[in-house]
Length: 197
Image (cartoon, rainbow, N blue to C red; front, side, top):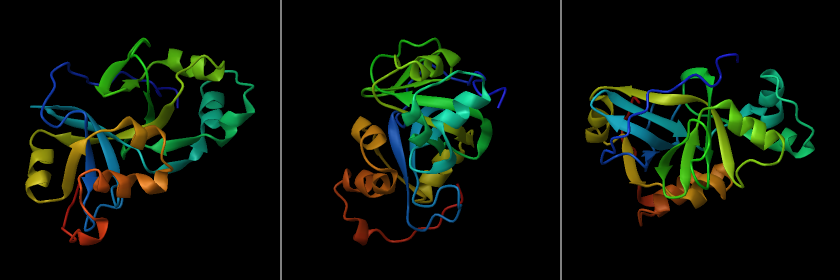
Protein backbone atom coordinates (compact mmCIF):
# COMPACT_ATOMS: atom_id res chain seq x y z
CA UNK A 1 0.00 0.00 0.00
CA UNK A 2 3.02 2.34 0.07
CA UNK A 3 2.45 3.45 -3.53
CA UNK A 4 -1.26 3.98 -2.87
CA UNK A 5 -1.39 7.45 -4.32
CA UNK A 6 0.94 7.11 -7.27
CA UNK A 7 0.29 9.69 -9.95
CA UNK A 8 -2.12 8.76 -12.74
CA UNK A 9 -1.78 9.49 -16.43
CA UNK A 10 -4.39 12.24 -16.61
CA UNK A 11 -4.90 14.40 -19.65
CA UNK A 12 -6.96 17.59 -19.76
CA UNK A 13 -8.62 16.80 -23.12
CA UNK A 14 -12.24 15.75 -22.79
CA UNK A 15 -13.48 13.08 -25.20
CA UNK A 16 -17.02 12.03 -26.00
CA UNK A 17 -16.84 9.22 -23.42
CA UNK A 18 -15.28 11.06 -20.49
CA UNK A 19 -17.58 11.88 -17.59
CA UNK A 20 -19.79 8.96 -18.63
CA UNK A 21 -20.80 5.78 -16.85
CA UNK A 22 -19.89 2.58 -18.63
CA UNK A 23 -22.62 0.09 -17.74
CA UNK A 24 -21.75 -3.57 -18.28
CA UNK A 25 -24.28 -5.42 -20.41
CA UNK A 26 -25.85 -8.52 -18.77
CA UNK A 27 -23.71 -10.91 -20.82
CA UNK A 28 -20.38 -9.41 -19.73
CA UNK A 29 -18.06 -12.40 -19.31
CA UNK A 30 -15.25 -10.68 -17.41
CA UNK A 31 -15.97 -11.26 -13.68
CA UNK A 32 -14.29 -7.93 -12.84
CA UNK A 33 -17.13 -6.10 -14.59
CA UNK A 34 -20.25 -8.28 -14.28
CA UNK A 35 -23.12 -5.88 -13.57
CA UNK A 36 -20.48 -3.20 -13.11
CA UNK A 37 -20.81 0.56 -13.35
CA UNK A 38 -17.55 2.31 -14.18
CA UNK A 39 -17.06 6.07 -14.14
CA UNK A 40 -14.85 6.89 -17.11
CA UNK A 41 -12.33 9.48 -15.92
CA UNK A 42 -10.06 9.65 -18.96
CA UNK A 43 -10.38 8.70 -22.61
CA UNK A 44 -7.97 9.71 -25.35
CA UNK A 45 -5.93 8.26 -28.22
CA UNK A 46 -3.73 6.38 -25.74
CA UNK A 47 -6.59 4.54 -24.04
CA UNK A 48 -9.00 4.99 -21.16
CA UNK A 49 -9.12 4.91 -17.37
CA UNK A 50 -12.20 4.40 -15.21
CA UNK A 51 -13.20 3.67 -11.62
CA UNK A 52 -15.80 0.98 -10.89
CA UNK A 53 -18.24 2.36 -8.32
CA UNK A 54 -20.36 -0.61 -7.26
CA UNK A 55 -17.98 -3.30 -5.97
CA UNK A 56 -17.23 -2.92 -2.24
CA UNK A 57 -13.96 -4.58 -1.20
CA UNK A 58 -13.12 -6.26 2.09
CA UNK A 59 -11.38 -3.05 3.24
CA UNK A 60 -12.77 -0.02 5.06
CA UNK A 61 -11.53 3.55 5.17
CA UNK A 62 -10.14 2.92 8.65
CA UNK A 63 -8.12 -0.03 7.27
CA UNK A 64 -6.60 2.06 4.49
CA UNK A 65 -5.82 5.04 6.71
CA UNK A 66 -4.14 2.76 9.23
CA UNK A 67 -2.04 1.04 6.55
CA UNK A 68 -0.65 4.31 5.25
CA UNK A 69 -0.02 5.78 8.69
CA UNK A 70 -2.75 8.39 8.94
CA UNK A 71 -4.10 8.69 12.48
CA UNK A 72 -7.86 8.45 12.68
CA UNK A 73 -10.13 8.50 15.69
CA UNK A 74 -13.42 8.63 13.77
CA UNK A 75 -15.10 5.34 14.59
CA UNK A 76 -17.58 5.68 11.73
CA UNK A 77 -14.76 5.24 9.18
CA UNK A 78 -14.52 1.61 10.26
CA UNK A 79 -17.88 1.14 8.51
CA UNK A 80 -17.16 3.10 5.31
CA UNK A 81 -16.34 0.63 2.53
CA UNK A 82 -13.46 0.98 0.12
CA UNK A 83 -14.33 -0.15 -3.40
CA UNK A 84 -12.58 -2.31 -5.98
CA UNK A 85 -12.00 0.33 -8.62
CA UNK A 86 -10.75 -2.16 -11.18
CA UNK A 87 -8.20 -4.90 -11.71
CA UNK A 88 -5.28 -2.64 -12.73
CA UNK A 89 -2.83 -1.55 -10.00
CA UNK A 90 -4.99 -2.45 -6.98
CA UNK A 91 -2.32 -0.88 -4.73
CA UNK A 92 -3.23 2.60 -6.04
CA UNK A 93 -5.95 4.63 -4.37
CA UNK A 94 -8.45 7.03 -5.88
CA UNK A 95 -10.99 9.21 -4.10
CA UNK A 96 -14.10 10.29 -5.99
CA UNK A 97 -15.74 13.20 -4.20
CA UNK A 98 -18.29 15.95 -4.50
CA UNK A 99 -17.56 19.66 -4.40
CA UNK A 100 -14.69 21.55 -5.94
CA UNK A 101 -11.52 19.77 -7.08
CA UNK A 102 -9.45 21.70 -4.52
CA UNK A 103 -7.10 18.96 -3.36
CA UNK A 104 -3.51 18.69 -4.52
CA UNK A 105 -4.15 16.33 -7.45
CA UNK A 106 -7.88 16.89 -8.03
CA UNK A 107 -9.52 16.83 -11.43
CA UNK A 108 -13.18 17.21 -12.36
CA UNK A 109 -14.64 14.03 -13.93
CA UNK A 110 -18.36 14.82 -13.92
CA UNK A 111 -21.03 17.21 -12.73
CA UNK A 112 -20.19 17.63 -9.02
CA UNK A 113 -17.74 14.70 -9.23
CA UNK A 114 -13.98 15.08 -8.92
CA UNK A 115 -11.18 12.55 -8.52
CA UNK A 116 -8.15 12.97 -6.27
CA UNK A 117 -5.11 10.75 -5.86
CA UNK A 118 -3.14 12.74 -3.28
CA UNK A 119 -2.67 12.02 0.41
CA UNK A 120 -4.03 15.40 1.53
CA UNK A 121 -7.64 14.37 0.94
CA UNK A 122 -7.23 11.27 3.11
CA UNK A 123 -5.76 13.37 5.92
CA UNK A 124 -8.76 15.70 5.64
CA UNK A 125 -11.20 12.77 5.72
CA UNK A 126 -9.44 11.39 8.79
CA UNK A 127 -9.70 14.68 10.69
CA UNK A 128 -13.28 15.40 9.62
CA UNK A 129 -12.54 18.25 7.21
CA UNK A 130 -12.80 16.27 3.98
CA UNK A 131 -15.49 16.40 1.31
CA UNK A 132 -19.09 15.85 2.36
CA UNK A 133 -19.49 12.87 0.02
CA UNK A 134 -16.75 10.60 -1.23
CA UNK A 135 -16.00 7.11 -2.48
CA UNK A 136 -12.55 5.58 -2.19
CA UNK A 137 -11.45 2.88 -4.62
CA UNK A 138 -8.35 0.74 -4.95
CA UNK A 139 -7.24 0.02 -8.50
CA UNK A 140 -8.75 1.14 -11.77
CA UNK A 141 -10.13 -0.20 -15.02
CA UNK A 142 -7.81 0.45 -17.94
CA UNK A 143 -8.04 0.05 -21.70
CA UNK A 144 -5.30 0.35 -24.29
CA UNK A 145 -5.55 2.44 -27.45
CA UNK A 146 -8.75 1.54 -29.32
CA UNK A 147 -9.69 -1.27 -26.92
CA UNK A 148 -12.69 0.43 -25.36
CA UNK A 149 -13.99 1.54 -28.75
CA UNK A 150 -13.84 -2.09 -29.92
CA UNK A 151 -15.76 -3.23 -26.84
CA UNK A 152 -18.39 -0.55 -27.41
CA UNK A 153 -18.84 -1.78 -30.99
CA UNK A 154 -19.23 -5.32 -29.63
CA UNK A 155 -22.09 -4.09 -27.36
CA UNK A 156 -20.22 -4.96 -24.15
CA UNK A 157 -21.17 -1.61 -22.59
CA UNK A 158 -23.92 0.98 -22.46
CA UNK A 159 -22.91 4.55 -21.70
CA UNK A 160 -24.72 7.47 -20.12
CA UNK A 161 -23.71 10.77 -18.53
CA UNK A 162 -22.39 10.20 -15.00
CA UNK A 163 -24.56 11.31 -12.09
CA UNK A 164 -23.26 12.22 -8.64
CA UNK A 165 -26.36 10.85 -6.90
CA UNK A 166 -25.68 7.36 -8.29
CA UNK A 167 -22.01 7.54 -7.22
CA UNK A 168 -22.55 8.90 -3.71
CA UNK A 169 -26.15 8.43 -2.57
CA UNK A 170 -27.32 4.99 -3.67
CA UNK A 171 -26.37 1.71 -1.99
CA UNK A 172 -23.82 -0.11 -4.19
CA UNK A 173 -26.22 -2.92 -5.03
CA UNK A 174 -28.65 -0.42 -6.61
CA UNK A 175 -26.18 1.50 -8.78
CA UNK A 176 -26.21 -0.79 -11.85
CA UNK A 177 -30.01 -0.87 -12.15
CA UNK A 178 -30.31 2.88 -11.56
CA UNK A 179 -27.60 3.64 -14.13
CA UNK A 180 -29.49 1.50 -16.67
CA UNK A 181 -32.78 3.18 -15.72
CA UNK A 182 -31.21 6.62 -16.26
CA UNK A 183 -31.06 5.70 -19.97
CA UNK A 184 -34.83 5.17 -19.96
CA UNK A 185 -34.33 1.42 -20.37
CA UNK A 186 -36.15 -1.28 -18.42
CA UNK A 187 -33.51 -3.59 -16.94
CA UNK A 188 -35.66 -6.61 -17.79
CA UNK A 189 -35.56 -5.72 -21.49
CA UNK A 190 -31.77 -5.90 -21.75
CA UNK A 191 -30.56 -8.86 -23.77
CA UNK A 192 -27.27 -10.48 -22.83
CA UNK A 193 -24.42 -9.49 -25.08
CA UNK A 194 -20.97 -11.02 -24.96
CA UNK A 195 -18.10 -8.99 -23.65
CA UNK A 196 -14.49 -9.45 -22.55
CA UNK A 197 -13.54 -6.15 -20.93
